[in-house]
Length: 107
Image 1 (spheres, rainbow, N blue to C red):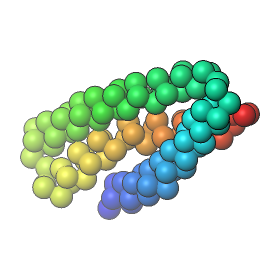
Image 2: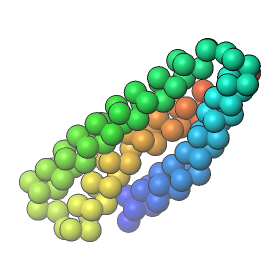
Image 3: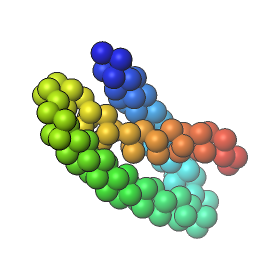
């Protein structure tokens, strides 16, 4: 059940941190729009490319986890947990790094 605890922790962290990252990015975009600054284009480009990369990485990781579970004849519960955990990991990694980076950033 330790794997289930880790999955719940990762899902809760993502649920908590993702809206904060969105809020910080929206604040930056709003300030850039008010000041007429074009410096925020790098952040907007990064935002889109990170989402595309995370989606691709998540799909690959979920497929590998599913294939591994099928080869080992794992139970449906452990298969679902492994696939979910593998699919969530790329998003969590990026959200945590964005949270650290954006919270350090001086405006």
